[in-house]
Image (cartoon, rainbow, N blue to C red):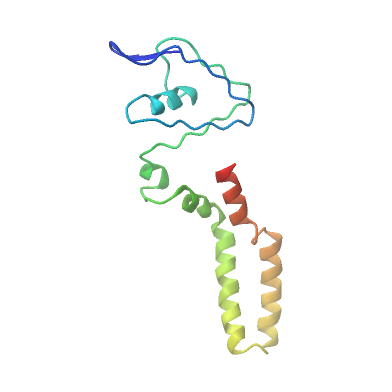
Length: 141
């Protein structure tokens, strides 16, 4: 596969095979075609010559370098963006912390203890203690 812009060859004669569940990273100086190559691999651009063959049901993720638009105009990390997927769990966690603070002041309130037990069980069953680990695992492979 090759890519040219006018008379300028960005890269030529590239051939690669990425195994199922494979992950790749491209390292190099600015302007040598890393982003162009990733766009071609992701199917978001076409090579000047050659082709890309993807396995059936292949999914390729691409996060633009300038990603503020991808995050609803906000600038934050991919980890912070993934945390937004767990907003309901995070809200439950905040409510649990608030209940814990009230119990520290009035720990003998039977209704508060019962409500806390129910809320804690819901939080645990929903994966409340696992969501951050899942995010980190997803991001690190």
